[in-house]
Image (tube, rainbow over all chains, first blue to last red; front, side, top):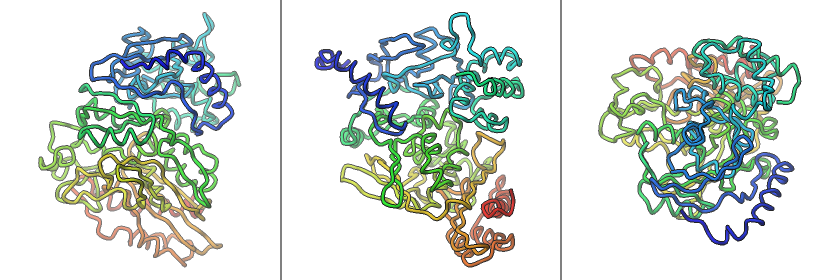
Length: 204
Length: 328
């Protein structure tokens, strides 16, 4: 692994930069380039494990990861967060949906090393203690599942759908939830659950 | 997935150098297609050069046009206020593609460089001249329902799967590229190529060339536009046929038109002659039928995709009717 000494020495400066870039990211539109303190030149040989910094569900981790490890496998195999499911493993089913810096992505098509410095939220990270997230409550209330395998992905995607402002009508929800497949066919009640949370106006 | 070396770049220059000196090195941006292909053993690079956080993700006015950084995310472009206001066709096309999750990772440059979803290309047990030049084309005599009806060759009948690119070719976009020999620009219509004798080459980029931006000139097509995508399910499926239609109207008279089709060729298929046939015409189904007829010149179906010879012109007429406000 290649870590420059300078990087270690500048830890305090790095933290300052990190905070200030978070602040500028809030001010700037999402498209603006932000100098990224977690993004330095890095080389990893084919089987070499190198350091990866990730914050997962509010907990900061420094992990050792080889290049071909996906974010999904890292979450499940290394961090034992098995709530995120491996359905197709090819980005077609959405069972692996997690949030990266608040945006929904397919963790199966995401190489873990490309997420350096980001904040990941999985299904395990949305409840507050014993208080379920409003979307979890709504899925239970509306019976938004049968076997449950797609449910973590549906819930993470449903939360993002509302945050993105794409949950105003049932048709819009169906369109913006199309990346999450439910083989039991619980779609009508999944849409009901998301619609209810949207109408309830709670912060998701 | 075959193991590979991972190299993270912080400058375009170092990324380009790394790809130039290693024959099997590839750029990695969003990875939504490349990682998929690597898992299936279709593409097996020895080295990935991670360019995902190079500072090319801005969407900015440039003169009367717009410059979209190659690393801008598909969702970011689709939701951009300036794009929605001035080039709504692009936003419509982007939102017709993939899923919300994929659009949050896929970049503009990566969308252009995505490979065909031809089943024979994806299945490493099958013959495919695109994957393995000289091995033959399994699709030509095989199950070719999703395949091309324009510009095919005896070596390949695959289609380019992008929606975004159909809008970009219609809007006369230009691709900006940085490479070992410096910078150059490529008209969008010349970026992708027809299969000819070299179906393994999807586009006209040279080894080590990196897309840095796409620019779109000022456009009068802010209102009467439509992107029609016909597919096997209503969302999250590749196009059987798609049509990008844009009209500039003066009352009922068509001042100018832009038309392009997806799902029908190895490259985004611009319909220049059909566009010309619309100029000066009054908005009417008859004029649109005529344009569709012109558009279909030279089309050729295969065993399972001959339905596209009807579906394509019908889709052109429908897209134009919606763009013109004749149909809701």
